[in-house]
Image (cartoon, rainbow over all chains, first blue to last red; front, side):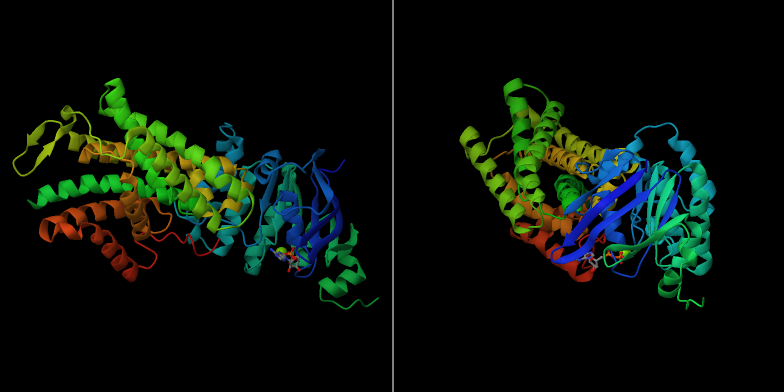
Length: 238
Length: 292
Ligand SMILES: Nc1ncnc2c1ncn2[C@@H]1O[C@H](COP(=O)(O)OP(=O)(O)O)[C@@H](O)[C@H]1O
Ligand SMILES: [Mg+2]
């Protein structure tokens, strides 16, 4: 059974149909990539999973539980951590406070302190800046912070919306490295990326979304001629 | 003489600050003015007075009564005047109208119950006068200053040290991000109303003691000042409200002492206009109100 099961989901913004019956699944411990052009509906799909947009049709279940009646904070408590597009650091809170708010739903779980230490080990630049307002961090550090904050929730599923957006290539590579190492901890990842090449290399399976519909899906899209042509900027030679 | 004025100003200003903090806290989480907050302050003052007159208890009990009654009233107002409208989506006018309406209802109810006349605390509440040479101060004035500053320190510790307090700041900065993190923002908003209103209730009792006057209309002036202070301090900034309140209190007392008492109320708005001309986002700009 899939950890996350999205079934024929339709979402509209007024007259705009952002998702026109999307089905997608993420298994336990799996990294799944979702690629597609700007405006294809990738972010909307993540918002649908978090309950930030209403479903016109379809259903989403997580860990065998229907999410239909769950509000956003309840979905977070169930084990879904979401790093939205444009990061979403709380700029006026300190780095430490941002990380601790990641563990908000865990209340006074004694393991929070261990996880805090582990996040700082994983992202050393954060350890040096714990008392600073998050708004003073560089783009790469802010991405580390939101990833670290998401890990503080001890999620079963991590939703990452364009984590490499606006980052220098080296720093982006660092972030991808972190994502791939996450699966060792058993967490599942749904990764939305404009950088299709990096995402497809990282993920075991991928989906291609076009104008609100899944156009392609499979385990080896990196070598699919249609993907190479449309998303990797290459002309298929064979 | 100046030191005496400063002391009086700090005392007055600390009560202004307590009221203004309430506007800031609520503006922070809702981006709305709570236009019945002046009446919460007034009801708190009555609660303190009742504790004293009916139960013959002392000033600490009066403050506690004001805090509890106002806090509960704040929660009720959130549930009745704000939450139902919030559920129906974006509408900036409706909560303004509903909170003004709630404020008027509170004024009328209190007038019906206690009359429109000012009422005072028993004579012994004026307190003993201590002449310290350079300044003279009454025990009641000391009480007011201590309670007001202790309340502000407690709030500071709460919003920086406690999990729920930091959650209030998180919600205040970005409601969507807060809910992603597992924070029940509806609960946080209710908690914020409770705290803001409790501080308003404390201020009501302190102001009632200071001027020895409690009336159903005492919230009207305080409300306009509280909102002016929030603008001076910076929209949604707790520390801006503290600084702005103290500044206004001291300024007001000095203006009465050295200019003319008729300028007293004009002073608040003069100060607000000057600060906003020099620093359009207030003393402690938060970035709230620009993007969300
Ligand atoms: N808040 C919104 N209001 C109206 N239309 C929106 C809104 N958000 C997204 N859309 C539209 O929905 C479609 C999908 O957007 P989005 O999910 O953000 O795409 P992506 O993340 O793949 O770039 C686009 O046509 C976009 O213009
Ligand atoms: Mg997007």
